[in-house]
Length: 122
Picture 1 (cartoon, one colour):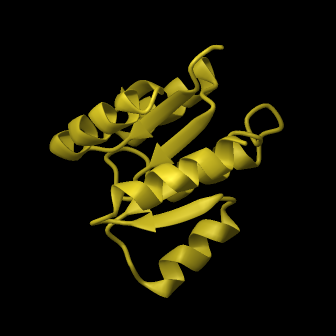
Picture 2 (cartoon, helix red, strand yellow):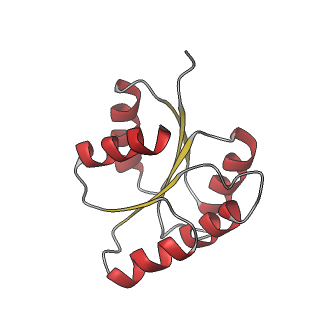
């Protein structure tokens, strides 16, 4: 069975490295983008099975990327987890409005993130 492909879009290198190691250890193929534009381009070219998307990114923010993908017939089925330090209720509400499937705040519990990934990939 082919490995599920996850695109991680985040500009925090240490976090991305730790997340990549954890995801690979759980059997996922991991792709990484360091800024919003690169993340959008990779999402469109790779069509990953799931996207973990930071909100505060250089070039394009996570809300814009999520909206652009979720309102496009070709990509709207890809689950998107907004993954951010922004813990205000208004941020989570805006995340839902742009089509995010989940909203997880940093710092995070790895097990919570992994269980959400499993749930969204079913």
